[in-house]
Image (tube, rainbow, N blue to C red; front, side, top):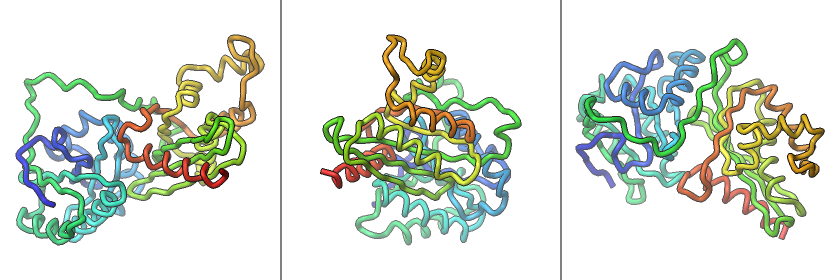
Length: 311
């Protein structure tokens, strides 16, 4: 179903917002300026990609899961044929994760002809089962209005240093599940680089939920072939707080004992995590579980399925 709206793209009901961009910069239009202000973490990822691959990005899509749970699809499309390739990629992504799509028309189109663009959209999203596609006549946000309150804590930007310069940006979602705790369990991860997503999963016959949460992260980071700049999302505060709140440093200082002098569990897994964070620059981000995040939901499905194999 294709609908037309007069709305600000970032306030529209679309779960995935498309943005036309170039392979050189990210500030050539008003809508890109709005996106840059709203999602600074996305700009960092996109800038890194542009520096690494330049014009090779043309016809491809950079997907970014925003802190508010929506997906931004940055489309490298300066010609009609590249736009068509991008729209097909967006369509496949939307179908896979069950997302509605918002696409800015009018002034936000840049070099593309509106009539041609509408024809492309109609040809790709014509099936009855296609996701809802909103053609949004973008209304710029009023500069006099106060900025909207953030819906979630933005992903922190790592401080620039020589260690991270030139590293590929990778987004990872992980989850763990356990039937009984202890009991049969499963772990899962989704690796995202550009518009490419890869799913990993596994399990154990007798395990715990925390162990599965750790193994999801360990297996994801271990699968990377070279040092990367990673944003790792997890609904496990056991994992994210251990790094973000300094628990790990305290445990190591106390010879792997907690503040209450109890032995730390899963020490061998924590040691693996420490070594992996020496290889990769990892930012840990907590996401609320079962709260509509498509990647977190998919990880949960994979982890539960793995746990079921051992029941």
